Image 1 (cartoon, rainbow, N blue to C red):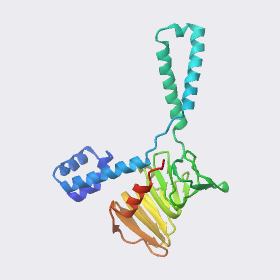
Image 2: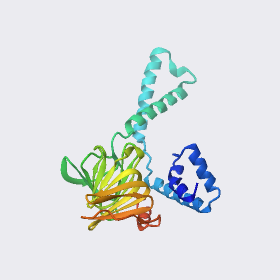
Image 3: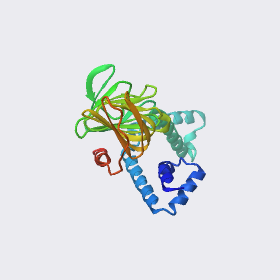
Length: 289
């Protein structure tokens, strides 16, 4: 393999998506190429930062935990006393504790597994409205997002929406966007501002529609920015179709394109992890405490 081929496979190599033969070829090349080793290290570093930013474990409420354990204990006590004096046996308490933990795990899986798109992180006090309500309310973490949910953020505010398959859209500061998670394919309409999208392969066709052009996912993560009279696409990984009525381009990793009204998206322009947008997100996307 040459450097060009290996560079196109590094993202899939990190994610464990290559075949055994492809992975062996990449590793053989990496053993002999210091430049590709550096590229791999940079990509791993970016991946770790983005995972840390977007990761937000689901916490089980202490109140729910106590209620589940209490209910299991009550039922086990009644059953044991009625039948064979279970609590007099030496292994009774450990067995009961194990049953309570198992019940808690089962309840947590069913209660907290996402069935629809939800808000998983909020910074500041963004505003939201739904298709059925014209008024505005403060957006809260954990709420369900349905088709037509509109989000507005001010300076220093952000919101992250996660789809059931793990795909995520981060709505940046000073942004106005409308989510359409229940449509087929699903997507987001960006009226103005900046959106970061990290989309899973099963969401092929996912789109972010800007004022001057639409970005359609072919399997990737990217920024889309709508400012003034232009919409700009910056691809971090994979590739995105960027199109309007005048034409289209396919934007690949570390490339960008800009669209204005009445013109086809511009030819691909080179960019890099040092792009100003990357620094902005790494500086502002960590939730404030």
